[in-house]
Image (tube, rainbow, N blue to C red; front, side, top):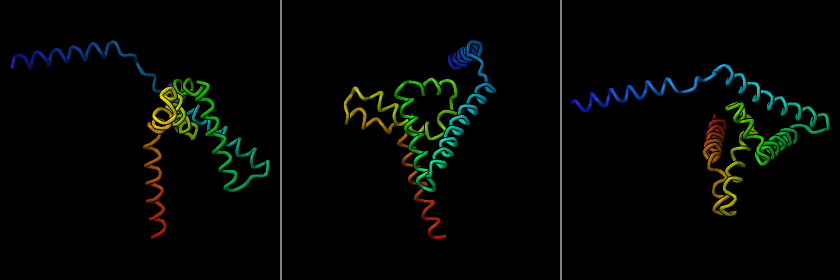
Length: 150
């Protein structure tokens, strides 16, 4: 009984020390940075859409071309090490758009390329994005079935 109360006091003392030393989070600054960077990425995508539409693309070709351009930009910036700095600054604002998905696929592939093509790059490429792909396909199939039967 005495050991339990001693441990509880020690834990409370430890938690008090942690609270005193932990850095204060800047919620407003973090939210503003995420909103600004995520919005900027989306504005760049919209600008690409307008430029490709002006060049003559329309419909599915236009949507596909914009998606491919943004995925390419995300992979290129990841390979150059720029997307990591954007992510450190913007947090969630950098992972929401399609460029964040490209980063989540390219980053593990780059990190594990030294382990080889099969066991390194190919096996680790979808460690972060794999769940997104699986649940995205599952949700798409479920919505498609609901749409088909309704």
